[in-house]
Length: 119
Image (cartoon, rainbow, N blue to C red):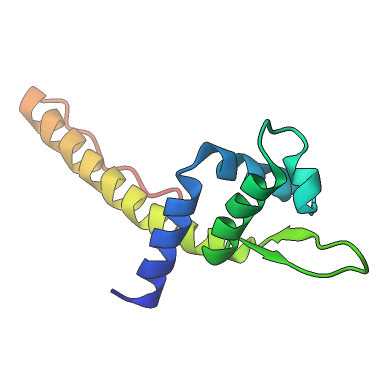
């Protein structure tokens, strides 16, 4: 398995958890410390820290040191990798549906022209 595939596996596994997806959504708006991230949850700071660690190991977030603060940053670059993977399969599915539409059109006598890809 290549490096990109392994990274995607880690990313999707990390995002399988709803709390981690929520953390990513919140970090998309602004950096935050683990304490700030923990505020809305009914869980310990240690539990939220473990969620952040999973996100960090998947390459979704990084932490830095800013004086006494240790903000967590969302790494948007990993979303490019996910988008490319999703886009490849979306295009394949759309092409399959276009072929099915054409076949159904021929079968019913309402043949349609294939649509151009708008992407």
